[in-house]
Length: 356
Image (cartoon, rainbow, N blue to C red; front, top):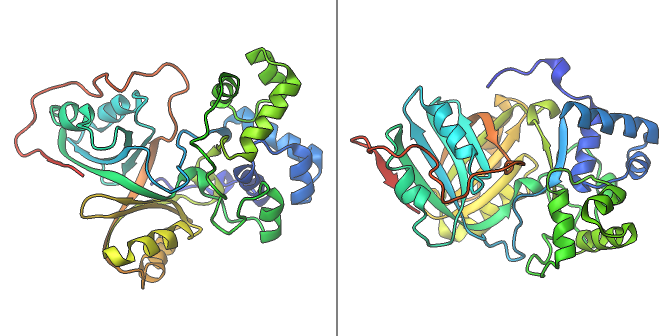
């Protein structure tokens, strides 16, 4: 992980504005100024700067969580590759629209990824494409059984409880690590609403006037439908920002073994921790997976040696992320899930495959 110079970290004011956008991706400059005790001109200037240099993007979240916390169908993949072939495999995976998240670890030959799939299916990527690739030396997969925390639900802990409460939509929980109810994702979306969501995917902060022009719907209708989608929890936004820019240069992947009678409590404890931006119960020997941000290695050590104590965890494997290769679906044309992710070659001797 490259060291981050002090001047590359955003100011506390900018970090607080990023956090405000995490609570409400379509937050107006006037509302942000009121809650954060800033001038509207300052907020507009900083938001424009964020957009202009790509520091911060607000998008519609690529992943939505069902109300019961269940998984809609996804696999965690841990892929080890021949040294020198890492970038080739990462690029091939990143081109697929069924792979929303890819991380490369500091080991130099290891990739963690999330793949969307049908629950219980023989996914072609896992069963055929990756195992037949000569550059892949091992493959492990685990099915996501339950979602405790999604990245889109993580909040940078730089706001006061009163500020969080003021920014939280009505009916949501302004707790320290909660983004509120995931909402009734089972509700049908009509064509008009779907057209609005599609338009907002690459930029969730588009104005109602711009949305009206792009979709051909009256601006008053657009405003009303956007408000309804937001109030029902069906418009989930996510702030894309390099965690190093907000003072969190260390990201760790945690594979934990937890006794069954502690699994639910441990998963919820991780979800409630301000450092954890992802927590999932999974199949396989590591039945609880988590991802977390830290300001330094000492904070990671404190998390492992103190915060995980008493949760019924019997084993922890920690991998540090060196590069986040992909954190959202490609905004342009993408290859379909059925397309080969990597060149299909004969599987080398000794390669193994784990299935969840």
